[in-house]
Every structure is written in structure tokens, then in C-alpha cells.
Length: 282
Image 1: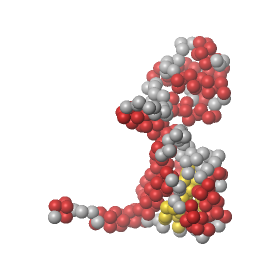
Image 2: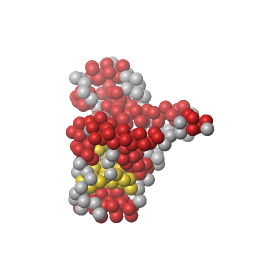
Image 3: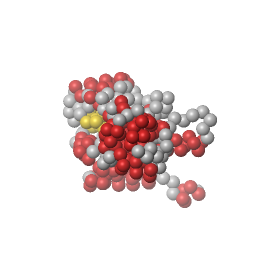
Image 4: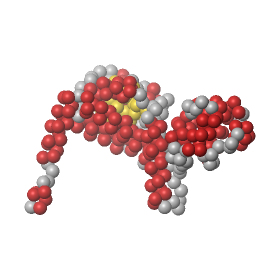
């Protein structure tokens, strides 16, 4: 899959109706565009001016540069749906393409300032609560595990009643991290809102910047994903969220000397519990 097609997908929502026709044509047909801009406009039901505008939206100087990129593109349909009868290799390949596309598109959604602010909020909190339900709880559990290894006082909460209890007793020294792919999970949204009323800072980790969770948060970590509704396990959204979590974990671990000491201490204790070769053979 080439970067141009990833760029088309990531820019798709902001395109005009006519530009989307051009994008659909390119995503569904051969990557080699017609030789002339006139022919291309006829095939897509658009004008030459729209073709040029579409090319510039993708960062090209004009149609000629777009045509050159199309000719070089390693074309795969992004986010292909898995169909009945697909071989295991085909399923694996489509899943890999989905994950690859998601991670590339996700790089555009969070800048240095966003990541830096998230790290500072984590470092400044006396207590951290990570909320998530269902599949998002698995992500919350992973985030909590990494925070504990960094030496922070953190807990992952997946039960709706416990979320409300923790939110009710939170304070301005508490940081709440709400995780929801849709950003509309009522348990997480409500608990985060209650925590915020009590003075807690809230970070939202979601794919929808316009969702209730994102709008009610102090900071948005935007985990872009083209998740399909039938994918109950939320595969690509989980990879997008884990990549953000690992970025934060790595940055804090590398920048803070006290955190490095905590990591070393925890690692020494964990390693001491492992079976040595001698113990295994005994």
C-alpha cells in the first residue's frame, strides 16, 4: 500500500462531494490515471479545476505531479473487508494492511505539543485512573500496567459502578484517562464528567474528536481508525491506541531520571521471580 492512497483516505472526510468521486475512482480502479486531465475529468464526472484542487489537497503542485505519484504507487485497497472464503493468508494480509494504514494516518492526529502535555499531566498527578469498558478495558489495562512500571499510582477500572465511585472521590490531584473508540460509551463518558466536576483533569483517548468524551476532556489523544462496525473486537482501533500509549510510556521513561530508577527497581524485582535455568532443570 502506498502513502498516496493512505493520504487520500486520511483526507477523505474533508473533501467536497466531487473530490470524493475522484478519490473513489482512484481507490477502486487502477492506480494509473488517464494520460490527460480532460479524460480523467470525464471519467470521474468532475472538472479540470476540481482535479487540480484535488491534487493540491494531497500536497501535489498539480495534476502532472499527481499522475507521476500514481504511476509509482504500490496500490492496495486500504481497509479491505474480510470476505467469506478468504484464505488465512488473505485474512492476515488484509489485517496487516488495515493496521499499517491506521498507524500511518494516526501520525497526523497528535503533534509534539499534545504528547508533551499528556506526559506532563501524567507526571503531575498524585493518582491516575484509567477508565475503559469491554475492548477498551484491555487497552486501559495495558496503559495502567505501563504507568505502574513507571512508578505512578495508577489503577485501571472496567466496572461501571467502580468508575462512578472512583470519579465521585476524585480531586484536582487526580488524572482520569477515559478510553473509548467511539467516544460515546456512556459509562466512561459519565464517569469522566463526574470526575471533572470534582476538579480532576481528564484525558480522552478516542477516534472521534467530536464525541461526548472528547468534548468533555481537557486533552484529546486522537486515535484515528477506520474501524468497521462488524469488527466486534476493534482490531485496528486497538493498535492505534496502543501506539499512542507506547509513545507516552517511552518518552517518560527516557526523559525522567526518577522514572528510570523506578523502572530499574521494578524490573529487578520482576526478574528475581523468574525461574533460572538451574531451577527449571531442578
